[in-house]
Image 1: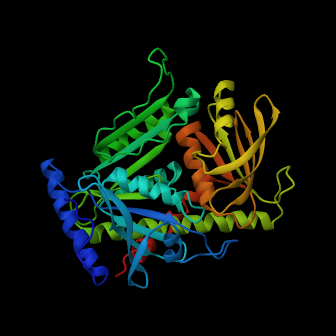
Image 2: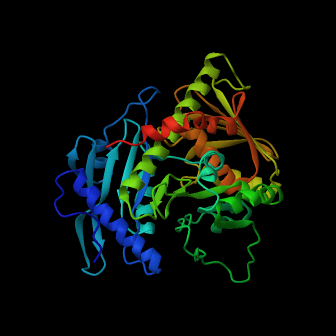
Image 3: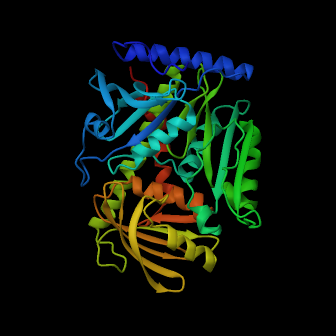
Length: 430
């Protein structure tokens, strides 16, 4: 029988002790390769900031609207309960699925030891709400974290990098509109999603998932050369941070999930706080820089005044892939969380007066087979920039050049490195 929470916790420290026990048992199982309990994992969630055009809600209000029963353990820490169907008992009951900590008005951390697939489906439903989004650790940001942090944690430490690119718009329409397969844990075998299609139909498309598990020193010697020769290796999807205090590590995915593979929940929470501080600083810098560009009067051939996100595809799309992308990128269920009605301006050029489904902010897009120009008005959530980059590389073109206004996206996501030690200390709180 799974146990997802301590019985009648009085405060957050009862929860910490519970997750410490779960972490120790899960690590022992990993060492024996006989895992008996699911790993503890955290999902970083982003909300609107008052400094933009948004109107922040309390986490209690947000999650009540999502169907949760809430028990406050202190002013910033709460238990979330949902109606869950029990297959064994054949009945629905209300149970605690995890715990939410509010880091600030904008960022929440959801801690849980539910099975990975169940937890991901649960948070994916929450993200459908305009109030919430993932904290998007795009591939350029993950590469920056590798270069500035993980690669310096000791050449003899073990690390894993996972690269993933799926050319879903190279596929028949009925296949590419299937729900995205949830990411498995880095050490587990990824099985193909079962999809019903004509057995005589051969699906020819690029689908790359490449995993490097080795000593950090060996990866450093090989990675640049491999990236130069195989473009999907520009799409870093997950990275393992070796623990600073013991064995094991913490796996960070593009969607802001951090999975604990150590025996310490305190170490895990400090790592989550560290990554939160980095992401927050980058997001705030993104918005500050973008809005300064707007104040300076930058405009790009559209009536709306805003800062451009410019993405150049190093490998231009074929006409067939471009047309399928335009056909499906703005349907009701799409991976980019965008809405709009594409207007054809030519065989491989489309304009969209649209909206970002996160907070329903306006966004104007010009899409071609060679790239994208997206105009985002002042007050747009900076998360939109990072989500677009992450999904373009994951699903459309793995190797890109990108700019926000006059600065490269690579430089923007590298700004955190200037305050690495300060950021690390800020993350260590009680």
